[in-house]
Image (tube, rainbow, N blue to C red; front, side, top):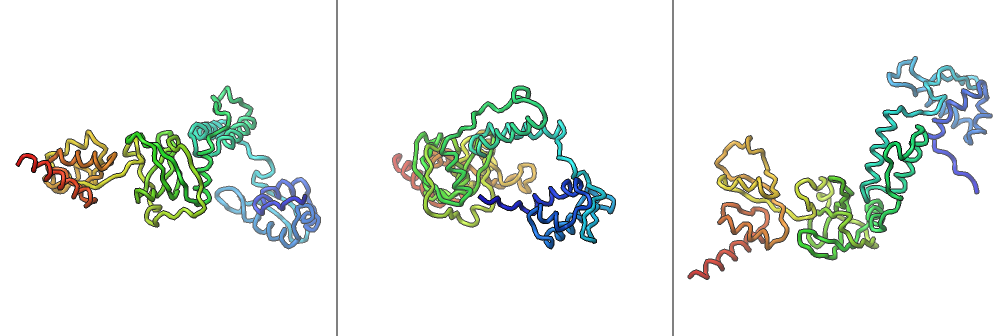
Length: 319
């Protein structure tokens, strides 16, 4: 089987140590060794001549002489020896990789563990000394399927457990991206049944099947990552509300994000706009009814109508 030719970047990285070990070699012979034409090799040398160390002054650039058909290397800019990580650099990379290995679904665990092993071997340490990742490299097939759908831009059919509603439902979603929040991995996707962007925790997705259709979320849905910091259950919907000043105490007890900082409000006596995360329309209706109109929904006419209808029905019972 014929070997694939190395990329130009890989070839450029190898050229300086190659020529440093073969001083005075002809361009024709070097081109034959490197698997390129003399014309392409000359172009590579012209590019390499402009590379070097930060600062990029003449004394920082790689010094090559090749005008007369033979190559001589004067200054290698350190590229004549393999790159070596310092202890601090290696430790930082190992800590980051071990954190990735402990986050299910973010990356292929076996690939992360292989990278950890290579770095440990390069710096002469062991997994036991550095608290190596304990995972055996296996991960649930559903995690692999989710990442594959995000990578290839395909729609997904999932069975998802909602902790707040305590039920399992089937949904078709259009994947947007994968997010990591508080050591949990989430699939951010457009939920076709909810008609909105939702975050689905990886470990609550029972099954995932890639569909034979592209992921097609609305363009505006993919522009801004969905916030997963507002709630312990960030797959829940949200609604915009107005809060009268007398009821601002609810900010300390419910998952509500004010539209503006309280101390910066131009009129402290005006209602405060905010965003409320809720579990179900039924819960939200009961919540709003309890405030007698002092907390109002402003972004969902359907829920507002439900609140009015329910309040009238309750009042009629006293007639």
